[in-house]
Image (tube, rainbow, N blue to C red; front, side):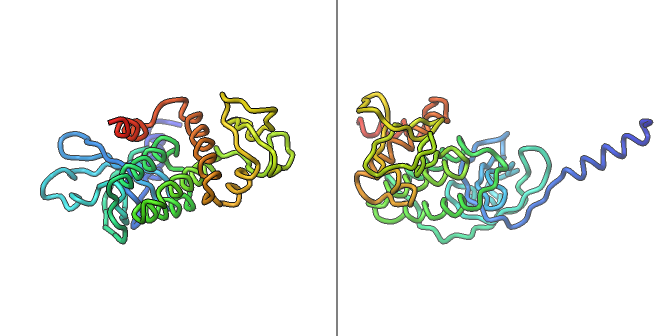
Length: 254
């Protein structure tokens, strides 16, 4: 094929790779400066998963985007472009959420960091989007629901991205027994514990089955679920600490 034919074909392929999305439900996860007047926005969308967008001129005082692109903002957004980072072309506030404050605000930042660190871009999970919206509502409620909201979201996130092991079946294929105790192996799943091992995270069969049914209310279940879920999260982060966890730890030591 000569150059005259090849060039138009390549241009057509590039045009075909362009994408345009309008009025996609989204939540802002994180922003950071880009050049002098713009921002890079990390957003969780309903149908396109986590996306990275350039908000050109968003830092200018006259920008219509000022005040919209803050963490936890519920928006309807549009973007266009090709490549991993697209261009934000539209953002409308849809509202409806009570602002987070105090411990709930820090918990919200923890949830956002989990998504940014664990969820690959352009990996759509509509159920996770629903779970995130529910989590923000719970965090904005009474303080007693904070722990439940975090455990439930950690569970939903790990399940959606395929990191959560089966909770009703052991690694060897046998059904989990309520009266037994199981060691948590982030790679294999639940392994019948031979005895108490202070170096390993373990859960009771009762806890595993309750989690499988989505019941995190009992105190014993909530405590063991926290240890189990955080072990799995730590494993898939390759041991790299979460910034929000470090901040929470430092605040408790003041």
